[in-house]
Length: 212
Image 1 (spheres, rainbow, N blue to C red):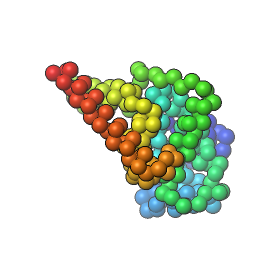
Image 2: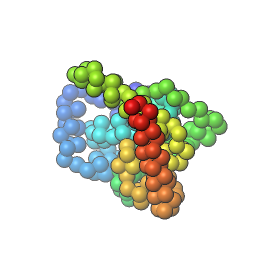
Image 3: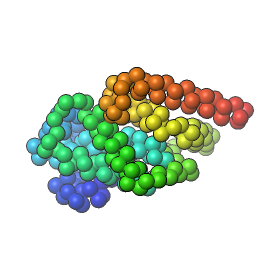
């Protein structure tokens, strides 16, 4: 997943050769997310590249599993990073960068749904990257089946429960951070996550029992 349209709109963010990538990688290993974003605010493009590499996979998986629609996920993914880029001058580290990032992604998704009025789920997607070629066929098949069972379990959840579950699993956010991202109180976020986990466990167990 690359920021093709975003870097075209904002050419100062484009990747600029091996030396820049190597520098960004070294810097990313040393600095926290907020420090990288502050550097990017001051014009350090390599800091953004490091942030993007660090978080792009988890953001895309969150959006893909939340929307259950690859085209929607790709559109919202681009919009999310575009907003991060445009907001760099006003960025203030008042919360963890991951909380800030996933709040932007969450709000972009909600806006997308509202603009399109009807949000259609697509159920025949594989939310993960293709399996590595060095796995044995049996392992590859089992991994694919496990992802399919998880995808079906997520599809059956109400949108709000799927959202908090993915913010916990994909983004690694705490209950307080999830409440902040989704704009609900802590107890509501906690309750939604508990119901989501219970339903997913039951759905996965039923799927496993059906395959015995």
